[in-house]
Length: 404
Image (tube, rainbow, N blue to C red):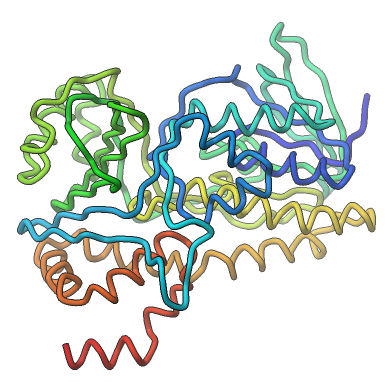
């Protein structure tokens, strides 16, 4: 049985990024995924401006651009009363993103690019290998038990196991870390054409209790996501296409925009969206990306969070492996760094969720932001992951608000 420095379960953005970063430090890495790539994935397919920094560090940004990633310089947000906000990422002042635009690209392409980067390094990549259980030695995770394409079982051991296997994470669930969340929403997604020009922005339509996101992910192809309360969609589990079509017709400002659309594929569903994951109580294990929890896609943080968490985890893992100490105490520095990196953005996201659940409040906030383009620009920078959320509380902005 071969022993590795790290075994990574899941080869999506978080898993592949972690494998690349650790392999660049000269560590031996086994990367396992149950799927054969390329494979589809339900996702808003938005990468914030700051995500480009990590893609560049991974050595794939030029490849992502060449694959046809669509630049998005902001989001056009329509409130329930029809107020339209032209939210653009700030390009001057105290804060600048790694780039002045976000990117939209199908996960089918992005995940393949990242996986190929891992394969270009001395990473042992195995597709169609399903991890079925963890190997435990008391309170320490020491490896995995998996099955190959032919169903044959095998075991592999390592100093560190990294769960990057998404919302159904075998690693997180085997350790009993997944918790339900009070926010009960479901996302429905399909690809369409025939909508017309987007310029250089994506579009969001807020119509409580729902909201919809349009992302132009390729020439002529748009990702259309609809997020609804899970209790509204659950009775139609066998009739998702009909439910989706009826529901988007009810969004007064969305339907005129998409009424001429032609569907390019089936309606896919994912839910409940939000769930919590507790930090592991075991040594020898880390969780990155959606395996560590998820809240809601309104601010589009999913892929950036996956990449950034992989970056943070790789830094901690490299130091731990160098000392041959993957104890819970040593690995706890990753969870502290993760909280520091994402805590304030999560607070902003929770506030926005409170706004978009209430029609009157969504209208009030939209009209206020329409009068404060400086505040709207800063909020877009927060959503774009390059403006610290605390900047929204700066005295200059608060004074400006009182005198506006």
